[in-house]
Image (cartoon, rainbow, N blue to C red; front, side, top):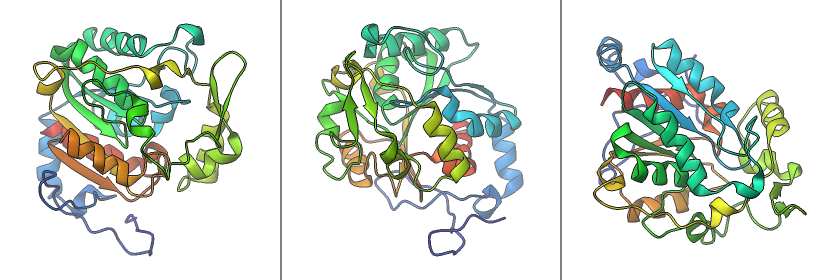
Length: 286
């Protein structure tokens, strides 16, 4: 079945171009954009290890649909819980950006080949610091509607500029232990607007409280390490957590090799999992 846009029309698919040229939407069906035999030959020739990093309040569970699609193509997929998230029992008081980066690098170093490291939302700051700390273990960086910091930036450097974001003091709540809770009554609209009711309910039931320390930590990167890892950006047009305007502004200051665009919300791993997997597969074949 073809993927339809918001007007009910089939999404038109073309090869994606570098960010200095016009950008096209990515398809729901690979065959609509690429010769299927050519695409499959490219994928077969480039089996990859994908390391998928979740964002704030989430855990590795959010990638389960995309992981299954990538694994079905023969790739290895790892979607861990960062410290303090999911089933990880690290005390929230000790959760930092460096601990996020250390966990990512520990996993990357244990692999037989450099990984394609994808980060969603807040995961963008984590994969950026990890790429600086262990660049030889990372084949490519993929920012999935994610924060894309420069050297010396914090997540809040950019989040504070996103006046239309639904992640704000009105939708979050500071807890007595110093963590931040995302108010459940706003989660559907902020994160899961285009997701099925079943997926949205599943995701909301798995959200955890978030340490604020990674939001405030300054990323430290260099051109010789993080700057030399190829990076790609996947935009989400209907994102209400990191608006499209901010996604594009961050890319102006830290340009990526290619930009992909999905007509969906802040959770493409649930709402448009096939399209997101297609983008990751294409990056893996480059």
